[in-house]
Image 1 (cartoon, rainbow over the protein chains, first blue to last red):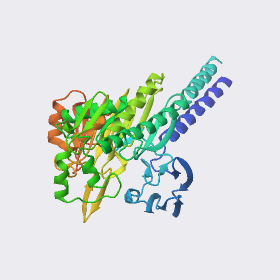
Image 2: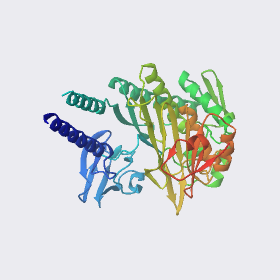
Image 3: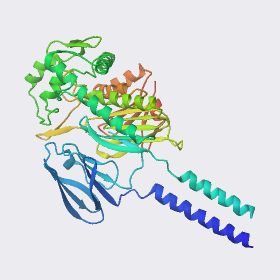
Image 4: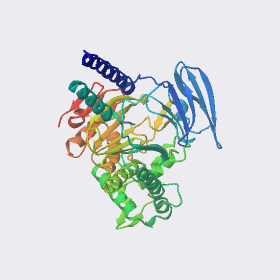
Length: 118
Length: 328
């Protein structure tokens, strides 16, 4: 009888672990946070559930980040090319990059693939 | 009791199996792009790879005064390192192989369009016509490590240098005993070996209309080089017209071949890089013919209308999208 209880206990534990692993490994597609890096150094993590504006100032320029409706976008920037501003608001996927300002916005739980080419 | 012991053992094995011996990873900005390096090995090797990328960036840069290509463009001749000479020889060979669709001598055109200095403009047709005679790999003469440029030609290795760099980095890691690694240098991804857990590499192909999203995935195991060339990667708008950075060496204009992107899959990063540019310039029809005449690469074409066309070998790896298959 005692052995049966142990058996049940471990079965339940295994089931919980399997479910937990699935949740952790697969995750939701939409990220909860956007991490903003300047030249590889994390400068802020923004909660994508809260609408906000955040200005990142560098010695030589700046980027204005806007979080709205669960997505983040670079809405203004000092760089000449402004490719980052043209990037659509995003909540997952490949990082948003501003090459001239060496700014990277990464999503914390969004990697369905090892790398994105293009 | 034995059952309990067996279950506990199974649990330990499960948990042990889940324990990650993850890669060492870093990100850098070099060669005017964002790069990620992942190595299943010593962190010092990642640092070595970064140093190697920075060193090659200097050698191949058209704007760095310490670089060999800068010197060659400025003086019309230069004594090169073995690596630069090797890359130029490969560039020349790939240019000839692609009938000039890939051409390392497009720098005068690239400069006229302002892509190097990020001061994009639309050059007048007269200006382009005056520059076109200086474009062509026949203007590059290589004698061992001595290089000479004739007819006002200047080099831009932007269409091949990242592929060569990825190849060199993985070669270095392999020689250091690393069994698994991946470098992602802008539109170039190259893998070494198979992941320690045996799972496949899954590489997303960027959606030309939404480049932060994958429009399809390529799944494979082992070492592979994958390079995408797309008109969306660097472009600007002027008077409502969009101009991109992949120039047709024949016309001096952004290649208008009807493609939004081309992804090349092969074993050699240098070849993949140059061929992705060449196929983009050629377009789907000529590109398909070129593939049929080759046996060393596969490709995924995405047309401007969003149609995905994969060569037979690429189709076997492609997922997450509708596509047509090109037969030999």
